[in-house]
Image 1 (cartoon, helix red, strand yellow):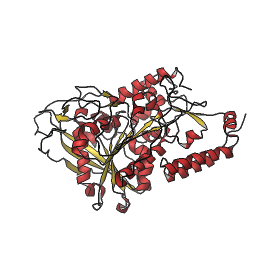
Image 2 (tube, rainbow, N blue to C red):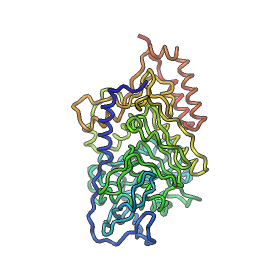
Image 3 (cartoon, rainbow, N blue to C red):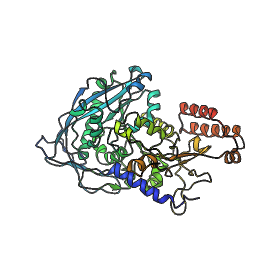
Image 4 (cartoon, rainbow, N blue to C red):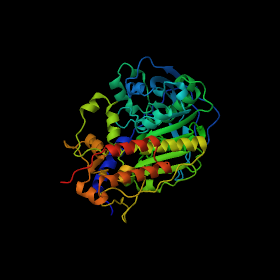
Length: 492
């Protein structure tokens, strides 16, 4: 049956909140006289920008740091400073629907920048698998959030990836200064209009200075994968359409949770709605979307699976679920923690990270071995276009993790609110956090009969996903162990 009409207002409220926080940016465009930087795009001349400078940070990172946890997992964390010049870019030609965009720098717009690279790598260099994930850190919350790391952490640590987080957007500076006023007062980020050169320089630096950054001998072939979570995925969509085809800095890209827009090149234009990824990309792109984004973004479900793009919709998943919020609190500034709202319902607990781990592994095989990832059916929709749900309230179709394929709960994506006074923070945390509402003992009895039958259903679902490449072996084992430890609710 189709989603009830009463959800429409909540969806609109969440979308407005998400897009306002994640996508509305003003770009600073003052024009000091600095040496010219070459254009980027289909008409770029052969001039070369001076290379950026790379300096190791002294002492431990004070923002977005997960060093304590990493040590116990056999990883290290180090912060580096990256400095250079960046320019504003304008469109060269139209922003066509096919995604084939071009950009050129604005004359006289060059400004200096100083940013940071946060590097996490295996402490034992022999464990490094030759792949570096370079994440455009998310600044929606006014501090640097490593959302991609949160969702990919388990796969990164067990498979030996290196990870580099890049502070790209000036929006994160208040949070950085709050967490390390003396350490981060050296940072200079002119604005989002300059972000393209900052991220491009970071990619170039990681590739050219991998041995220094990662403490490894030169690998036979280093591969860089771009990572963007939420707002950052919106920016990387523009990067892939306008910059990557010319610069060729990445070997593949993982986008997670993007709204159906692409970021503007600068403050003189708006976002591009329902953008397509250009068809001539010759580097693989994995795009993972939760039910929350898909339900308010009809165009997303029309994303085609192509020779260079795989698009997965994860049924029942929320944009800012319980796991993501817990890991966000671990790196958030104090003022964020002090204003934590209390939600009416428990947050969405579907293990979305299992789907992202499978996506990363699939992207790795695609990049390294040329094996395309499996395709996933889209979520079901009713006659009016809203997502269709079963009698338990869970969505139909999509990538179905065992927790929703053999559910003990209804995984909601919009039916949660703050217990306190209405606020933007409460809307973002509770609505974007979704909900988990246990099914009644009577309903479970009707659906499964008994606990043993439910366990068999979980096993069947997990085995099917494992065989199809949609669940990693470690997550398959964890799913079954968690099910075995889950108590069966008693009937009233």
